[in-house]
Amino acid sequence: MRRELLGWDDVDALIDHLIPQFNYEFEGMVIITRGGIVPGGLLAAALKLENILTAAVDFPSESDMEAARQSSRFSAWPKFIQFPGDDVLAARRILVVDDVWGSGRTITAVKNRVAGAGGLPYTCVLHFNPYRNLFGNARPNYYAAVTDAYIVYPWESPRGQQGAFLSGFDQ
Image (cartoon, rainbow, N blue to C red):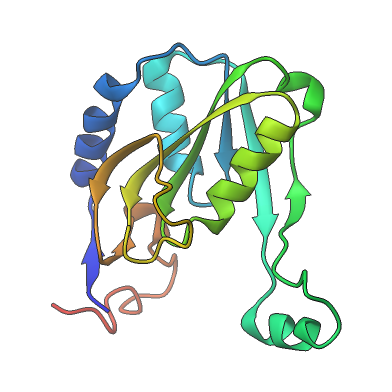
């Protein structure tokens, strides 16, 4: 798989590309941990949003799914480790932010849970990968770029592991 290593200037350009796309004022933001923390913070500052919430979602690993397949057909349902209460989402326009829409599982699960709480969710990512998307024609409401690459963002650099960051990358 092709990998693309981004720098902070690349991230700034992606944020600058997103901002003019927003055609609504949002009453809150749900940032998906961990990938959405940095882009969500940058967007929240640019949009002057004050109601910033987080969602942490876990999907079973492949080995967990194989074991669960033998006992239940609902093995791929997400586990919400952290999620805002319905009262802070209901009847509010909420921007749901993550770094990338690959398969779309995580952001779709969060979007559906916001909608289930009575909120009006709009999804936003830096990168959309339509080639890995598991949701047919569904796509993020807002995205800065389309890619087929595995994106490595500057905040993903391993701290204290000199040389490990670039190993395995096409240089």
